[in-house]
Length: 356
Ligand SMILES: *Cc1c(COP(=O)(O)O)cnc(C)c1O
Image 1 (cartoon, rainbow, N blue to C red):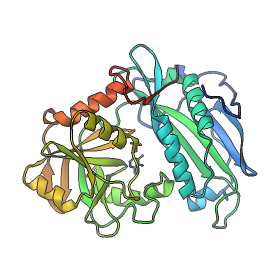
Image 2: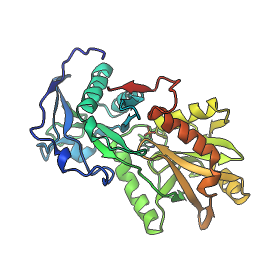
Image 3: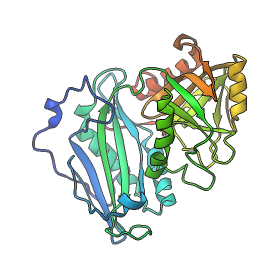
């Protein structure tokens, strides 16, 4: 492992909670592994990195984050291979993105080697929490928040950075029903759409709830200015298969730079599948759906990997997309991506970082 200036102290849990946990039956995001990494930013520097038991913590009611949402997060996974090795998938990409989010939100960046060291040590310690099975993984949640006890609007001086992990299984089992949202916005030019910051998600809850009341699992967000161009699907990037070509909205500053998105584009290119990264108009997708040229559509993100879209609604017109068996193109990309992560397929990209 790369050595860091700072050594991470470790306080082990007295008695692992693993023995009381049924890893075969877990709900996404509700079960937490034994340990967490914690580090505070005080007086202009990161201090006392430590791995300790996952537990509640004290926070002032006046902590800046609770009022003005100066907080960012990441999501990545560790996978177990068939021969028992454990790897992180592209952690450097998440570290770089977290540091870009930090800059946008006036927060301190985290030294990359220390961040990676913390991920590796934490996962190594709690790798017994990775469930067995083809769809299992350890979801890793790094996040940082403003901790100053102060209720004026300004960047905090103090911050806390934490990483904890969750054993997980498949996220969306069933293909989802989505609608194209042309009233509410998730992001807009000059806003914080590209940062993985808490406020983006809070703002999306109401429109998503309205959509859920109409029976939709997800919204397809459109641009905040004209609502004529497609941006993302819920909390995932979105891809469309039109006539066997993959099309995805280009990164324009308000779309989150997904690691899954990038991985899919690279695998597709190497499989000879054409991927167009460009502006994608609602009209184009609507027309392709009408003409039967829209063969499939899916959301892409770490939590779900590839979430197939079963139907897509424009206004009051709903279009069903072909059944799973016909989604050959997506299947070949998805299987390669999953194969690399689980060590079944060689990793020509250097995406895996071994933990053990
Ligand atoms: C995290 C996230 C994604 C997916 O990013 P991955 O790195 O692939 O997990 C896409 N859109 C939004 C809004 C996100 O928060």
